[in-house]
Amino acid sequence: MWLRSQTKMKYSNRHYLRSVVLLTVLLCFANIVARGANPRRMKLSDHDRASIVGSVVRNIFKSGSTYEGKYFVLGDNLRPKWIPRVAGYDLALITRKEIESSKASLNYYVLWLRPLKNSVHVTVRLYDSQTGTFPHVIVFYSYQRAGHKWRGRPLGGGGD
View 1 (cartoon, rainbow, N blue to C red):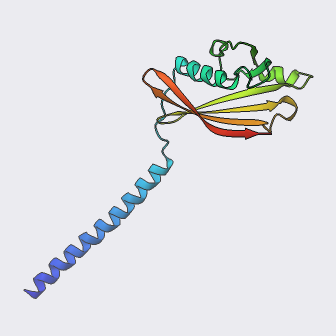
View 2: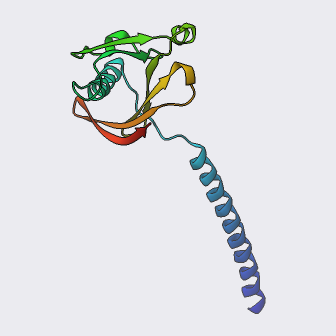
View 3: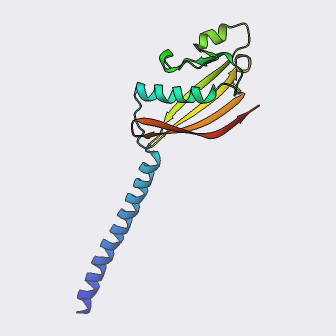
């Protein structure tokens, strides 16, 4: 009887030990996979991008909030029809080549849309073509879909 219980104990201890090792390995593997996996990001259509870009541009260029006149927006990944007409402002898309070849100093805005799982974060930077690597102003927005429309809210920002 005693021998029988010892054999069962050895047998159950081995299975227990194997189970613990296997569970530990599986948990470590799951943790590594979870850290390396990107969260599923929402897909944006051209209409979505146009709505968000238009909203951001209208928010930045309000009459009385900035000097009216001509402003440049870097056209990387933007289409001219996405930039709305705003009274008092002449907004023009500009290419990197035009910025680099310009002899005069140009101030230009760069809009960057970053889709996340439930929202789209937008970063707006204002650069001077002479110091192109250091932005003068950075503003952050967050947009979420509300039905068929996008609702945005400023997250803050600053500059010199």
